[in-house]
Image 1 (spheres, rainbow, N blue to C red):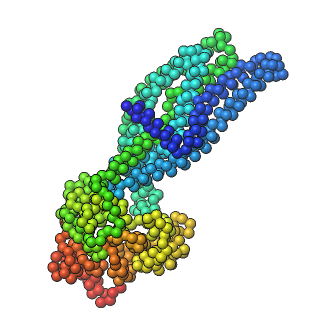
Image 2: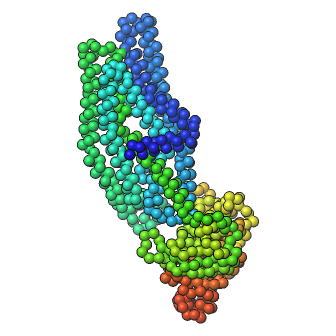
Image 3: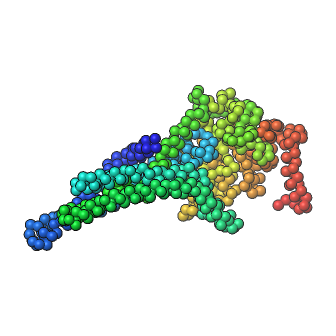
Length: 617
């Protein structure tokens, strides 16, 4: 069964190269033929030339024997030159194939992980293990190198087989004996290779953590704390511990195979001893011509690639091991996309909602968790109105956002849009109706214009829409002050690039969401949109709140009550359910949790004011 799987994987590698470039594939096949023939042909030509040396010495270079020697040397030199040219030619083909296949494989990986509309699969350890393997991170070998390496290995194997055939022209049983010896030892040697690579694959989880710890030392977002807190030795220690834990089973399996490998080595050594002894016996009894001796002696070594195991075998097995994981990712994540929606999915969400979004008995539990984050949650979001969502940390507010955005699917209840189950709408069409500012928004190392527009809907950026979005978000002055305005690259890692403060990035993230609204999004979700703003910027945001949310169905999550009080309605999320809804004054009068939270926050500021003698800073 493993051999069948290995055969299928090797065939898949060849098909991958063939589909990428037929020209490269045919060139690689020609190099394979050269690998198979040229080494033995060179040895034969050199043997013939060596055999003619005595006659040429006896009769002179100008004699027919001398001319035959010169022709033999010329043929041997040509064969040797062609053999030497294989290396550079293979390097060129390998580089070209690697460039094409790397792009192809990366595109397949991106398409696979992007296939589901949600993000649950990106939090699945099994998927992440398979993704790391498909990228070649686990075994440290790039799958894009697999096809050419495979063909080169096949060429070497065929070259060893040809060498066995040449030896059989001297003693029919000698080539057969060496081939048989290698075939006998090949299986345990292959088991050694598979065991080594298989251990890496089974240890993908600790290895992923090992690479993570190593990355702490050089990735800027983590390297600062590693140095400030003196964590260098701890990082090294943890990486070493995880690597040892991951590799220990491999070392044990290698130890168990050592005896079998030693026995294989003795068998091969005996076969070569037999070959060399036969040649020595015949030479000592003058039963073998010089030409034959000069050809067959080095030909013994030329038979080794027919079955020996080298570092290339380990590398190739590691490269090939990534391909089934890639295929599995494509198959599994493609089926996840199909499972996310019900059978009658045909609805285009463009222009929705027109009436309201309703959450009916909504429930959600994270995989492996013992309790629901949300349960029996009922809430209505009227179209064109704003809703503020408040609650203590861990209440499930951000989880609710991911459910609204169809990044996760409810485990109970349902969400409806204008009376239609959200699961019956095309997920990606619905997501195009949303503009979201997440708490952990992305900071792209692109220009300001690209950060905001991101080629939304595949269209080029609309300068007028960009300007309106920046003005509504309060980012126009910020952008105008950058070295190259909208064309400024927002990363210090590029020449001429610059970075922004946390608050400036937050304003840019808000600009991005409002640009999506300008381009047709109808639902605006703001998750802690002022968390990184300074006091002045936050006050300006409050003043613009109605203008920012005007005409959209908006949801704002914030701990700042000066923000949420401006919303049309406020909902309190507590214990996974909506416990209070209403306007700011109405909820204060109810004297429930909202009032408690509001007064607790207000006390902080009034206390600070009292301590400064009524002055605000």
